[in-house]
Length: 182
Image (cartoon, rainbow, N blue to C red; front, side, top):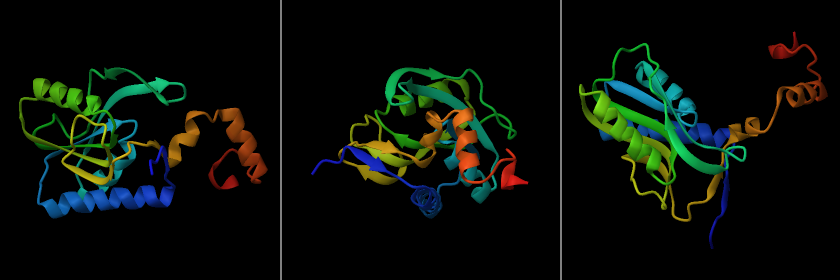
């Protein structure tokens, strides 16, 4: 039986991030730099940064911009990395939500090796590893043999616009526009 769509709720999503963090810890890999790929890896990177008490570096990379994020286009990698931890160095852990085709992971790895010569070793950690990928991440929580489309809990914001959010909040009794309705 082939699975074409995988639906993930917030509870499962957060549990998977924790499982991934524990997997990296139990492997014994010690990293000096932590880099997440935005946007999908932001939540993963945030949790890792807090758990490991390591500054988070962020690199924007995007290929899924068409049709509300459902069609892959050309890969764009940002020129600069945002971080408060100084230049990437030593052992690096690169985190993202998934590896789909493997193109992003491969191109980002090339990009980093060319620009950050102080990197000794680079490993990758993702929540989902799809069979269709040309690259195998070092750490992953779920291997997806059928390479289904993953529906993550935050994707509702891909098509929700501020006026729609306002209507939704009003329907829930929050009319202030402020957190908690105060």
